[in-house]
Structure formats: structure tokens, C-alpha cells
Image (tube, rainbow, N blue to C red; front, side, top):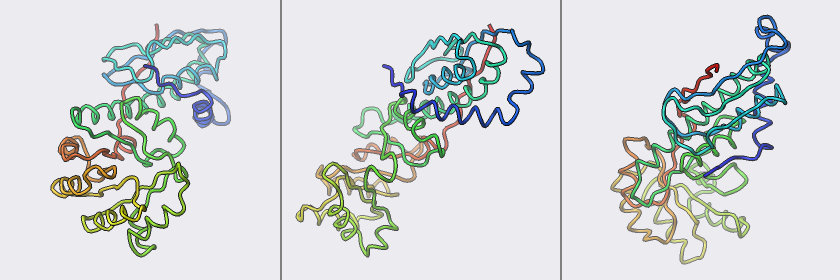
Length: 286
């Protein structure tokens, strides 16, 4: 199933990356070595297995340099592939193509790395009810693309920014004077379509949040921050399905299964975007 982003969201990122690479004088190596009328055909080839994300970055980078180029995308975002898979085949003016090459590879490799790591986490919790979510720990300027890559890998997106959901964290609680007071203020502020989440760092704070249910002021989601597995299980039992529970902190591929088996609804993983390795994709002349 295709999960493509609209070009209007991708194109500014691609053009910014191209401008950064081309600098003040353009690709002086291509200008020096490649005849003006030379053409080139090459494939973007996976060196390792993975999950594809950002393939439209290849198309847009090439077309930005050569609007008449032929770009044949062989796979779609969200597709899994093996090592040796041809992801796209391009025929274009050689100078233009070589100038676009690194920008295209940087973006598709970075985003496919995010999608591939996300798929590993999703597979690790298969059979539980837990869903894998990203965070705001994204590369500045690439958030829309990186969160898209998480979705390509089978994860779900947490809030996109500071403006689309209320997430009360420890410093908000400290300034407000307590977790219950912070949630009450958030509930009074929030429009009817905006969700409220609060982070708690212990079972005592969870009890304070549960006390808000009778007031009709409870949050929609409670983030259980750095809870032990025993405390996660206790929290799940105490909440008994009345609120969505999200586990966060101390999550990696060796711990995520155990966290999921406690019965939490969501596990948020900053590593999906801040620590995903770039997937090795190369350009092979045809």
C-alpha cells in the first residue's frame, strides 16, 4: 500500500538540500569532467534489506536538476525489499543526475533507515496490543519526512509539534505545583478536539491522576515514564482500561517486548528517529 507524502511537503526539503550541496558555483566536478550533452542511466540499488521510505525524494531531486529526466520508481514507500533490489531507475542529463545523486541518496537512505528500524520494533511487539509510536526527537527540518518514514515502517505518529496536543511533562508539573493541578488547567484550556496527555514518574502520581476521573477532568493519555516492568503491570491493573497508557523511557529492541507484554497501549521510542542508522543504498550505472 502506498504511503506517499504530497510533493508540496517534500519538495522544499529536497530543494534546500540541493542548494546546500550546490553551494555558490554548482557541481564543479561535473562541470569540469562531464560533457554538456552526456546522458546517464543508473539504478538506485539496495545494498541491504529494509523498508522503503522517501523514494519520492529521488524523483524530486532528479527532476529539480533535469525536468526532462525519466524517473521509474520500481517500489513504493512502505514496501519491504531484499539486498540487491532496484528501487528506482533514472535516465537524465549526466551533469544534472550526478549533481542530484548525493541529495537523493542521503534522503532515501536516511528515511528508509527510520522505516526499517521502526519495522523491527513493530515486529518485536507482534501479538501484543501495544503500538509503537515516535517522538519529537527528529532531525530539525525533516520532521514531516521522518514521521512519514515511521508510518511506512508500521509505527504510529505521536504529536507532530507543540501545537496539536497537550503533553504535560515533569517541568510543567513542577511549575504548576502538582500533577493534578496541571491536568485541571490543561482540561480547562483544551478545545474539544485536542487530547491531553500527562507524564507521571511513579505510581503515586498515577493515583493523583486517577482521582481526576470522578471530577471529569482526567487526561486522555497517561505516559508512564521509566517505570519498571512490575510498576507497568501495576499501572495497567489500576487503570483497568479507563485511560490510554503509554510507556516511555528505557526502550530498545531488547526491552520492548517485555514492556509490551505488561499490557500498555502505546510504547513511544525516540530511537526510531534519533538513532536509526542510514540504510545502505547505492547508485549503479546501467
